[in-house]
Length: 426
Image 1 (cartoon, rainbow, N blue to C red):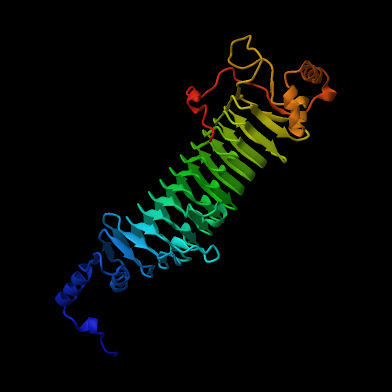
Image 2: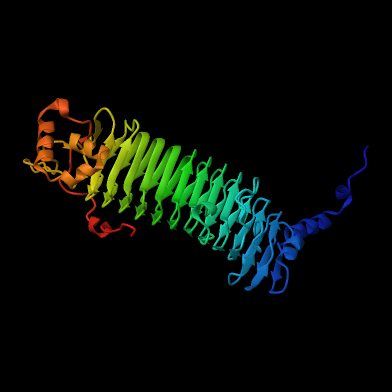
């Protein structure tokens, strides 16, 4: 017979005490006061411990290589000395909460960040932090199920836009939750590439190139965010299976929402106001575009490049300088079932069912000529152009392809539309 193990030779009551003792071991909390080293406390801590840092300024860069919680009391400042990353997270299950994270380096090549979450650091949580004078606020790469919530991020605002980093950069991730952050004075507030099954909710982005720049990413939700005073509000490029719902994009100099090379997505109940172009739609197919308020933009919707087979219903297009700028070789049907509201519709409703009796056509030959020769706008009120417009309506050979709404609504669905007038960024 083989010998008994040590455990087999111990009395049962001793085994019970050992089990109970092992179960009573608790994670420790390490306190750090001004003048002490945060990095030293992180080095001493065991996996699962908490390092609690009192208010003050700590001139150091941290590398967190074990699961732990780094908790700030009174928002202490961690300042990186304008070199490298202020905090680099290399282990999974790390939480950083309640800090001012400041003064990263400025190397775009090395992607210097306030907090760099490197590949494999899954389930990182960055909560209630202030990022000040960092190149990238957060760079998150190859880390899944990351949560970034309730942070304030401002970049190196004295740098030219092209020399700044992004507020939050996601690359090659799954399941991120980006919620209730405020981001400004960066290159792109949120940059998303090859990142799937993520949620972006309640974020507020302004004074950047794009509020969000979104590429090669699938099955994401973009909901209840606000993008204003950027060059572009939301840019969705080469993506599919997106939900874009209940957002507000206003006062952006180029576009409110860009849908470029996008399929199988839902864009609904958004407010797009006071932008250069409200919606810029390019190569979009199988999109549900419903219930949006598109108001007071220079161009309400700019659409081209085979954007077809989309469901477009219940949208309100109100007081845009141009409702639609459509460039294609055939008509595109909108409002096939319920129709959209067009503030410049001149038709009538004899039966009182709330739907116009004649279809709405968004553009004609005169519109196309003015897009090609902008100086023609000086003659828009002239009898010659009005006559040309009338002739084009009477002779099909002169008719230009257009967006055609077969059931134009007589009243807008959004009764509060007036509050969104005058939102242009001046």
